[in-house]
Image 1 (tube, rainbow, N blue to C red):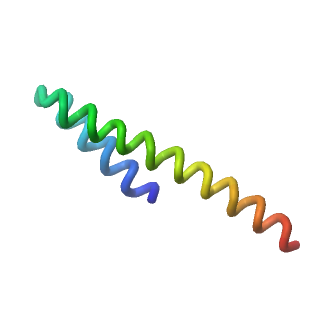
Image 2: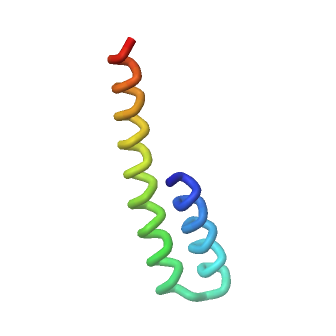
Length: 53
């Protein structure tokens, strides 16, 4: 999922440089959502791994 976040960030940067504002904004929004989902899943996996020990 982190790869998808990085991919959408790169798409947003390239689209922003080329002047495609709508595409850049959409890709940045998707990247932000995926990043927060990744962070939540990461924290949950850390807590779950810590509870097993």
